[in-house]
Length: 147
Image 1 (spheres, rainbow, N blue to C red):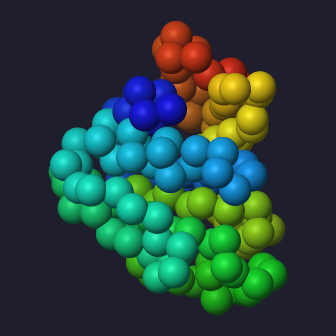
Image 2: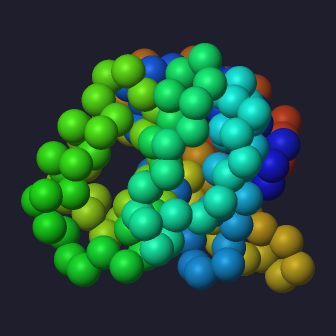
């Protein structure tokens, strides 16, 4: 999970949004540890479940949102995301399906499912421009979809 996250993180840029979905304990925060490292930050990643947002410094600022405790698709989350992350940060959103209707159409989506003792990870971009940036991720053990 960490290695795959690193590979994805190396492909991200300021203004990117990554939505991570999966059951509790599936590995979303573990994947984010890799993404943060791959994006060039040496920050220690922890789950922001009780504070909802943690920021990490690095070559690009990273905003890590955890919406586990969010109740419904409150439009304030879209505003918070836009104001906090904006175009100068990478935004990582755990449990983003809770506000999916409010999220920008262009984003990366990471779906993590249990697969026996391991995990099955699907990664895709919702815009054609992401297709080339995802090239090579399948070598890290993920199902990479484009389109």
